[in-house]
Amino acid sequence: MAKERSNVSATPDIEISASAKTHRLRFERVPETEVEFWGNPERESVSGTERENLPESVERGVTYRDAGVRLRIASEVARKEPPRD
Image (cartoon, rainbow, N blue to C red; front, side, top):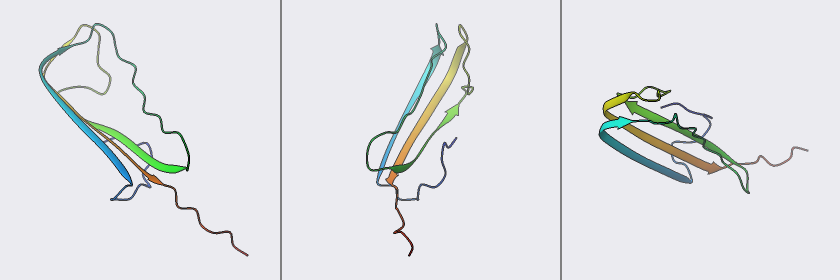
C-alpha cells in the first residue's frame, strides 16, 4: 500500500477503508484522483491503495480483467509537544 506519510500509529483516530472488485473494467478517460486532508486540529494522515490486476496508472481504452482495488485512509490528531523552557 503506497503511503503519503508514515507517522500515523497502528491505531489511528479515524480509519476508512473500501474495496471493489470487477470482472471487467475499461476506462474511456484516465481518471484523476486525489486524497486531501484539511481542517483543525492538525493531524498526521496516510492513504494508499492495493491493486490486483490493475496498474498504478491505467490506460484509456484498455480492458482490465478480474481487477480489484483496496483503499485505506487513516488519520490521527497531531500530538503537539509542550514548549520547552
